[in-house]
Amino acid sequence: MKKKLLTGLQPSGQLHVGNYFGAIKPNVELFEDHQGLFMVADYHALTSLKDPTVLRKNIVENVKDYLAAGLNLDNAILFQSSSVQEHTELAWIFNCLVTVPFLMQGHAYKDKVARGLEPNVGLFTYPMLQAADILLYDVDVVPVGEDQRQHVEYAREVAKKFNHTFGNTFKEPQELINESVATVPGTDGEKMSKSYGNTIPLFATREEIQKAVMSIVTDSVGDVPENVYAIHKLYKSEDELITLYEEKKGKYKDLKDALVEDIDTYIAPMRERRASITDEEVKKILKAGGEKAREIAGKKMEEVRKKVGVSL
Image (tube, rainbow, N blue to C red):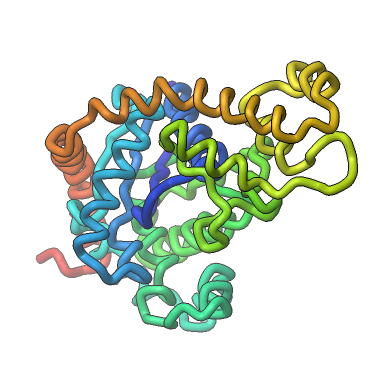
C-alpha cells in the first residue's frame, strides 16, 4: 500500500527555477509513489500577503505551474485550505492546548521577525494551523526541507498532547527529508530568491531566459564560470557537461548560449502544457478536490468534537 502524504504550496507569487528544482519537481515525483493531498495554503499566505487581487491570481497561476509540471491527480487530492473550514477549527483547539513558550521556540517565526515582517498573531500561531493541516488527514509522511523539520515536530508534539489529554485520535506523522535537493543558485551565485532579484522565471520565454542567463555573474579568472556551471548541471548531467566545458574553456558567452538552449529545451514542453490550462479548469479541479478533502476532514472533526466535549 502506498504511504499517505500531505504537501503543498503557499501562493506567494511567480515561481522560479529554484522553486522548481527545490520543491515542485520533488513533490511531483513523490505523488508517483505516494498518495494523499496537495494543499494550496492560501490561509497561510495571509500572514504576509494583504492584497486579495494578487492572492486570487497567485492561487490560480501556481496551481497551473504544478499541473504543467506533471502533478498526478490520480494520486493527489488538490485543494485550497480555505475550502476546508476544519483546518482553522482544529487549529483553534490546538491553540488552546499548547503554551506561548512552546510557540516562541518556532524558528520560522523568529527568522521572519528578524527579517522585518510584522509579528502578527497568525505568524506566531502558524505552526498550529500547519499541524491541523497535517493531522486532519492521518498522513504517514510530510515532505519538508531541513529548515522546516520543526513544523512536523510541532505536529507530532501537539498530536501527542491531544492524544494524552483526550484519548488516541491523531497519527503521529514523520518528516520526509529529500537529502538530494540542493540549494539552487541564482544569477549572482547566491541562493535563488525573489527577494534577491536573482531568479530565472520557471516558465519564461526564450527571450526572458536569455536575458536572465546573460546576467549571470561570471568569474574574471578561471576557465569554468562557476555560477553558469552550477545552474547548468540542473539540466544536464555532469558527465554531459565535461566535454562542453572543456571545448568552450574560457568562452563564457558560448557557455551561456548553451545554457539558454538547454533551459529552453527543458522548459518548452511544460510551458506549452501550462498555456493550455484555463482558469476555469483550475477552479473545477480545486472545487472537486475541496469536496474530497472536506469529506475526510469532516469525519476527523466529528471525532475531535466528541473528544473535547463540544458535541452534545
